Length: 179
Image 1 (cartoon, rainbow, N blue to C red):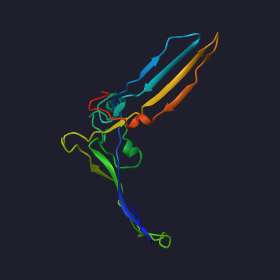
Image 2 (tube, one colour):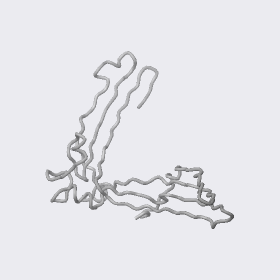
Image 3 (cartoon, rainbow, N blue to C red):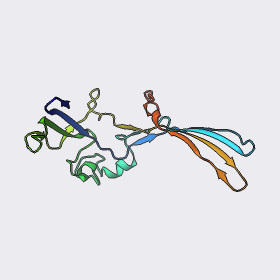
């Protein structure tokens, strides 16, 4: 988008991908002290290396894809794209939506020619290095840091959690980590 003194103009493209099933792993790390006079402390890093790979084969994908084990065909038990009203797609495709905004200002907001868009359509989404495979489709879990201070009494445990921080998500993940 570009904003000038008189109007706004620009264009954009959204690419929607859907995943059913998949697989993933996460790594949690935690440390706790020994009890000392009824007190104990601990820290934990939840999802230090957590990732879901959506286009990996798995039980859910096998159940949903139907007898031919391929998403985007007529025998699918469930296709998330078709369920949401988009064209049914397989793991080698995505839904594309493109739009343009031409000279939008307060005076011309009601004109239909200001905003134009292409209808949702299925497009190829293959790995450029290996066209026989879909592009990598994964979601990283956010890492969460927690610290706790425990007070142990006769029949009572007080355990306030301090400083839940999830800004560690920008930590780089080496190739192959979390597998």
